[in-house]
Length: 246
Image 1: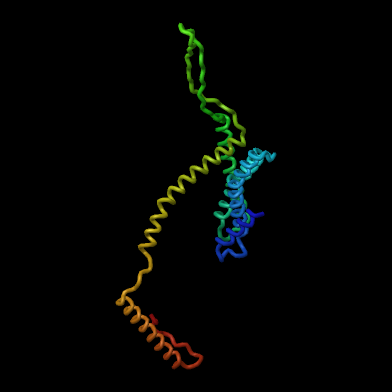
Image 2: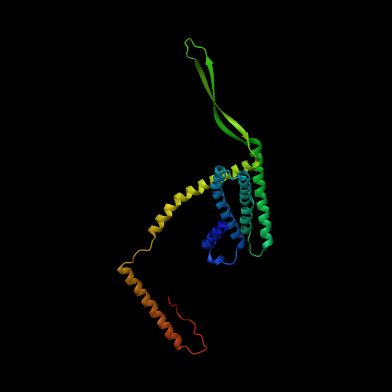
């Protein structure tokens, strides 16, 4: 309930006044995305506390359910919403938008499922590197025994489940997108700040103030002249050919 209230607060605070009372579908999608992001962050300390205090919760199942919801949200819900609003055309109804959203989102889901199936059948294992140590006693001439040791490095392969592999692919795609957009943002933010500082409103000089006052006086004089001409017009007639005031 707390996460829901916080998500609603952020949605209302950053929403535009023009969208007040409408655009409920994208608002619902944004609200769901905020809630999922908060749950993914807050479930980690819950997992740590459950392991430390032996709370008895099935955190593996909870992680799996939450990431399945995230996968459905990223692969199905978001593409449908994007294609639904991109297909908005004048003269075509909502059925056209729904059909376009369903068709293109189905293509996205099929492509993602095919990618996961191909990768899982070919490289669906987790490789964990380890070092193997072995020692062997050897006879010596004195009373102290001696031994020779040998160290070998290898990989242990563990077959992962489909859910875990899907989570890994989503995490990889997410980190790749985060790296790209974060890198672009870190470069663009200083440039935007410098540009805003260079284009900031500066204090006008005395000459600029004098020019502005002269221009305003000229506009006021033209408005007074136009008002005087309007007063001289006969009632019920429209005089054409008035010159522009500015």
